[in-house]
Amino acid sequence: MNARTIAGKTLNFDEDGFLANPTDWNETVANELAHDIGLDELTERHWAVINFTRADFDERGEAPSLRRIKVAGGVPTKELYELFPKKPAKKVAYVSGLGKPSGCI
Amino acid sequence: MFDDNDVDRKICIICSKGTLDMAYPGLVLANAALMEGCEVDLFFTFWGLDMITKSEMAYLKWSPIGNPHKMAMGNMQMGIPNAVAGLPGMTTVATTMIKREMEKLEFPEIPEFLEMITDAGGRLYACKLSTDMFKLEEDDLYEEVEGIIGATDFIEMSEGAQIIFI
Figure 1: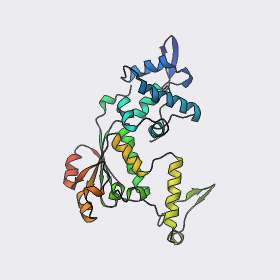
Figure 2 (figure 1 turned 45 degrees about the horizontal axis):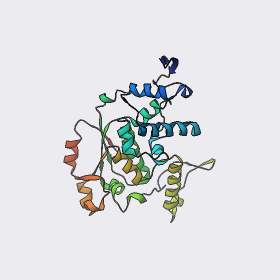
Figure 3 (figure 1 turned 45 degrees about the vertical axis):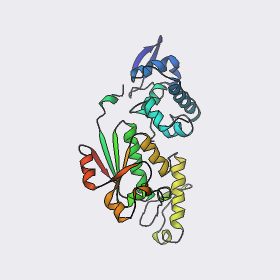
Figure 4 (figure 1 turned 180 degrees about the horizontal axis):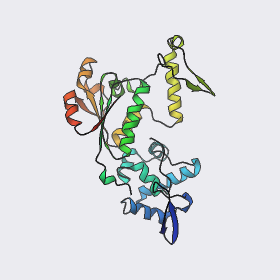
């Protein structure tokens, strides 16, 4: 497990490199994590995805699949791939401070 | 973090079967590969063509005939004897069962799955020989299909790719 200091707080990361404890997450952390994966700025649309993901995680205890973000979160597949290029499911979970997603859709 | 600029992987999936249980594996793999940043082409041949034929794609079926798998039904694991599976209406019953299970797992139906795949950048191709055999024209196929191509074209375009045959 790796630790890193973000905004004056020491945060742990799991063996896959994802934030170990979802409760450590806040907007400042999200911005920092976004930089790690090459997203220089989180737009309003990124936040729409992240906020849905966090809310859905709080409700169901797991990161939503891309299909769920599309169907229940209202963000189309095409846009998800534009906002979080190449590896959208992993990137969304990473920036949202959740573990590596286990779903296969 | 994810080294996504390094992804230089191309995957070609050949879908040759049109039953529900054989349609899903190809689409799940294609979608997973896209989610990992791979380039993905799908080639639909023989019965696999049903997956991208407008009049068929939403109505793929599954028959338990010849399949000894025991399905979970309530809290029992139950196989369906071939003699029962062959009765009229059993294919519809089995198809409904499978669809219900897929829905519970939040999997999309075939048309929506194909749309997700093409929206993610996956490309769909129909096999020339099969469309000729089934008397299908481009208009009969799902709008997002890139084209009807021959086996030689497919081999050409899959150069260097990993090929999965289903």
